[in-house]
Image (cartoon, rainbow, N blue to C red; front, side, top):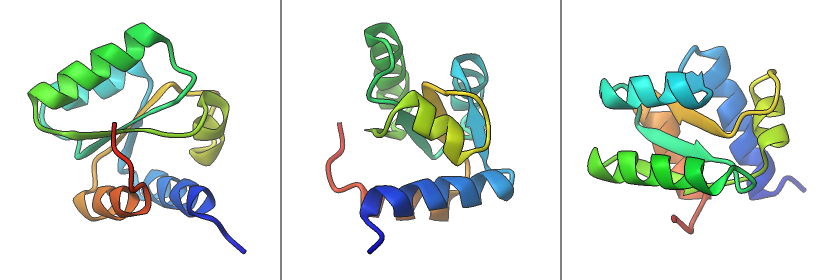
Length: 105
């Protein structure tokens, strides 16, 4: 049985293959400021500073954000090294991930 976390990781991987993911603090922040990101995913084990920074920046720009998974798992789901922050650029995929994550931060 596939649980919601596995589904979410699958959607993140799908978004990555479609070229609709930005990862890493600097790149994600830059695209967030340009209005290219529809969803911010922050790793639960990210630093408090990182969590606060992205929570504030995305709230200011009215972009949804979720606290989900670990840095290692987020990195694995996009086939890269551990990532504290991901940005989903595709609106439909962002919406689907939000539906799977009932609890927003």
